Amino acid sequence: MTSGAPATVRLRLDLAYDGAPFVGFARQPDQVTVQGTLERAAERILGQPIDATCAGRTDRGVHALAQVVHFDLDPEVDRAARALDDLEVFRDRLDRLVGPPITIWAARRVADDFSARFSATWRGYRYRVADTPALAPLARHDCWHVRQRLSLSAMRRASTHLVGEHDFAAFCKKAPGRSSVRRLDTCTIRRDDTGILHLRFVGNAFCHNQVRSLVGSLVEVGAGRREPDWIAQVLASGDRQRAGRVAPPQGLVLERVGYGRRWPGAPPAGVRGGIRTASPAAG
Amino acid sequence: MTSGAPATVRLRLDLAYDGAPFVGFARQPDQVTVQGTLERAAERILGQPIDATCAGRTDRGVHALAQVVHFDLDPEVDRAARALDDLEVFRDRLDRLVGPPITIWAARRVADDFSARFSATWRGYRYRVADTPALAPLARHDCWHVRQRLSLSAMRRASTHLVGEHDFAAFCKKAPGRSSVRRLDTCTIRRDDTGILHLRFVGNAFCHNQVRSLVGSLVEVGAGRREPDWIAQVLASGDRQRAGRVAPPQGLVLERVGYGRRWPGAPPAGVRGGIRTASPAAG
Image (tube, rainbow over all chains, first blue to last red; front, side, top):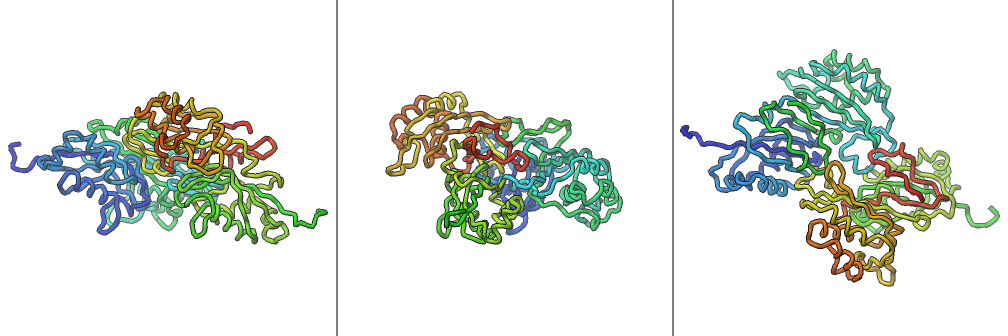
C-alpha cells in the first residue's frame, strides 16, 4: 500500500437464524440481537471491534435462511491473520460460538466495494400460513396457523394488484421523510404437499412490516372477508388503517438476497443442511 | 345395559407434540408432561377425571407426530354428552386448550376393547441426523447435528444386522425382570434433498432408549470409527457398555403406530398441516 490508511480486508458472511430468541437483527443496547451476538463472537475470534452491515434488517421473531452481512477487519491483527489463512476454520469456529439459533453458512473475502446492503439488487421473503384445522407442533415455529380454509385462487387474484412499482404506504410502518415506493417483482402463492401455503415475495427492497402487512391483507381475501379487488383499493388509498392486520412474525423468513453478476452467489448447496436451495435466479 | 356398572364410552385421540417443553409423555407429580397437560385439558372440557393410555411412552425431549391415546368417559356427565355430540368441536376445543406444543389431529369413539397400547401391532420411529458443516437453525429442534460426513452405505450394511427378532439388551436401558427381546421389521436410512439423514425403525415394540442407542451406534459406523460388523458383535454381547452413545432426544419422533384391521386407521391426510403423511402401511 502506498497510502497511509491501514489496509482493511472485507469479509462476507452468509448466515441463517431462528428469529425467536432475538429482539431483531439490529444491535440494541442490553438486548439479545442477531447483530450483537454475531459481532461479539466475531470480535472474540478476530481480536478487534467488528461493525457488520446486513442485506435486510429483520424484526423481532422474523427468521432468515439467507441473510448476508459484510464487515471490514484489520489483517495485521494476529488473530485476524490466522482466520484469513483458513476461512472454513474461521466459519466453523464462528458457527459454534454464535450458538445454535444462528448458522454461518459461509465466510469469504470480497472486494472493498461489495456492500451486503447496497450491492443487493433484490430480496426474497417467504411467509408460511397453515389453514388446516390442526398444525404439526414444530411447524408453529415458522408458520401462522389461521385454522380457516383459505382460497388460493382469490389470494392469487388479489396478489396481481401488488406486482409492479407502487407506493406501498398502506402496507408499511411509516418512516417519516422516507419514500415507501418499492418494486415488487413477483408474488407467488402455492400449497405444499403438507397443506401449508407458501407466499413468496421478490422485489428490489421492502419497507418496514411490508411483507407481513401484505400477508395479513391477502389472508383477509383468502378467508372471504374481502374481495380480491379490495387490495387494489387499499394500495391506492395509501392508508394504513384500511389494510388487514400485520401477520405475526414467526411465519416470515428472509429467504434469499440477490447481487449483481460481479459478486459471488449464494454458497454452494453442499454446505446447507436442512434447507432446500431455491432454484437459481439471475443476479 | 343390564349390568349395574356405569356404561362408559371409549375415545381415541391421535395427537402430535413437540417434546422440548415436556419432561416426557408420562404423568409425573409437579412436572410438565404431555399426559398431564392432555388429561387436565380433557378433564376441564369433559367435567370428569381422565386417565389416558398411550401407544408408546416417549422420553424427555422426544417428539411425536402420531401418538395415539385412549381413555374412558362417563357419557352421563353433561359436558361429556355435549362433547360426544360433536367430536370435531371437542377436538378443536381440546387442541386450543392443550396449547401450541401439543396438536390434536383427531378424536373419535372406539369400541371398549380397543387399547391404544395393547391393540398396537407396530410402531414406527424416525431419527434425523445432519452430517453437514452447518445446519438450518430451525432444524436443530428435530435433528442431531454431528458435523461430520457419514457413510450411508456403511450405516446400511450395519443396519442389516439389526433387523429381525433379537435380544436388544445391548441397546436398552435395563428394566429389571423385563425381557429386552423385540422384533425390528425394517430399518431404512436415506438422505433427503436438504442433506439430512432419516433413519426409520419399524418394529412390534421398542425398549427404553433402544432407537436412540441404535442411532448412536450407527453413527459410530457412519463416521468410520467402527466397522459395520461391529454392530453384530455389540448386539450378540448384550453388553450396554459396548454400544455407542445414546443419541440426543430431539432427533427422535414417534412417527406412526399401526393397529390391526379391526381398528380405525390414522386420521385422513386432510386434517394434517405441516407433515407429509407416510405412505400407507398395512395393519
